[in-house]
Image (cartoon, rainbow, N blue to C red; front, side, top):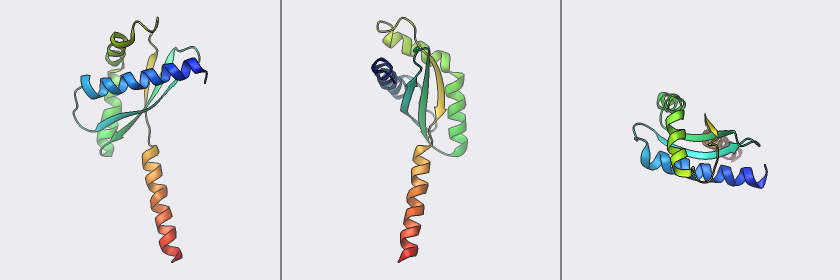
Amino acid sequence: MSIRTEKVASLLQRELSAIFEKELPRKGPIVTVVEVKVTADLGIARVYVSIIGSQKERENAIARLQKETKYIRKLLSSRIRHQFRRIPELEFYEDRLFEKADRIEQLLKQALNGAK
C-alpha cells in the first residue's frame, strides 16, 4: 500500500468507527471497525468489522451493514466531503481473527496441560 492509501484507510477507519458509535442505532451486537483496506485507485474500501454476539446476531449485523451501505456512505460523505472528490464504495466483511486467536489460545492451554 502506498502512503496515500494508508492515510485514506486510517481516516476511513476513524470516521466509520465514529459513525458506528454515535450515529447508527445500537440494537443487538457490538460492531467495531478492525481494519479498512483501500484499493490503489481509492474507488473501493473494504471494511473489516468485528461483531461481538451470537452467530445469528453476527449474521444479521453483517446483512444490515450490507443493506445500509448507501446510507453509511452518505453519512461518511457528510463528514469527509472536503477531503475527497469521490467517496469510495464500501464493502463490509466480518473479521473473525478474534475467534481464531481464542481457539489457538485454547489449543495452547490444552497442549501445555497435556504436557504436564
